[in-house]
Amino acid sequence: KSPIHRQVIRDVLLIAATIGVLEACIGLSHVNHLAIITGTFDNPTLFSMAISLSVPALLYFLDTEDKKIRYLVILCFIILSLAVVLSKSRTGILSMSVVALLLLRKICKIRRRLFIGISAIFVVGLFITMLLIKSESTTGRSFILARTLEMIKDRPSGWGINGFSKHYMEYQADYFMQSHDEQHAFLADDIRHPLNEFILVTVNWGIMGLLLILLLIAYTGVWLHKKDVKEKNIIFMFMAILFLWALFAYPTTLPFVGLFASVYFLPLVCRFW
Image 1 (cartoon, rainbow, N blue to C red):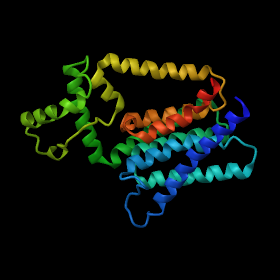
Image 2 (image 1 turned 90 degrees about the horizontal axis):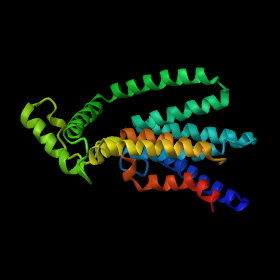
Image 3 (image 1 turned 180 degrees about the vertical axis):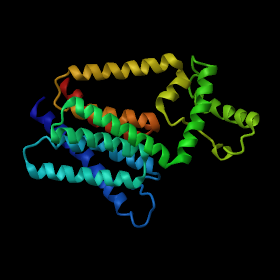
Image 4 (image 1 turned 60 degrees about the vertical axis):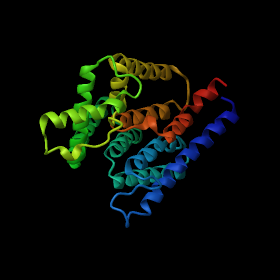
C-alpha cells in the first residue's frame, strides 16, 4: 500500500476505536442512574455490540514499540470491557472474553495447545454460566428456537423471502392452541427474528441456503488467510466477533454493523486500488 493508503486506514481505524471508547464512556457516565447501561442506544444489546465491534480497531494500535500507546490501548480495552459487563449483555461479555483471551496469549506468549485447551474450557464454562444467569431470557430463546425448528422440519427447502416473519406467529399460535401451556404463555409475543442469523437463513432459504452461507464464510476466511495484508488479524477478529453476535442476535439488520464492516475491509480495498 502507498503511504497515503496506510495513513487513511490508520485514521479510519482510529475513528472507529475512538467512537467505541466514547460510547463506553457515555454508558459508564450513567452507571449510577441505570441498572443496565445502554449508552446512546435504546437497549443493551446494540450498545454492547457496537462497543465489541470497535475492539479490533482499538487493538490495531497495540502493535507499536511506544509503551505509552500500548498502556493507553490496554486501559481503553478495560474501559470497553467494563461497559459491556455493566450492560449485562451475555453475548457482549462472551465476545469481550474471547478477545481478552487472544490479547492474553499475545502478551504472555502462551503455548498454542495449552492456550486452546484453557480457552475452550473457559468459554464453555462462561457460556453455561451466561445461560443460567438470565433463565427467563434463555427460556424465551429456547421457545423461539423450538418453534423455528418446527418450521424448518416442515419445509427444509425454506419458506422464501421474509418466511420467518410471515409464518412464525402461526406456529406460535398453533403451539398454544394445541398444548394449552399456561406456564409459558408469557412467551407469546410478536416475534420477527429468531435471534440467530443462521437459523433465519435456514428458515427463509432452507438447509442449502445455510450451507452456502457457511461455505462463503469459510471461503472468505481461507482467501483472507492467504493474503499478505498487515491488518489481516483485526479483520479475522472482527469476523469472529460478528460470528458470535450472529449466533445470538440480529447484526445483519443494523446499519452500524455495515459501517464497521466497511472500516475493517478497507485495507483489502486499498490493496487493489
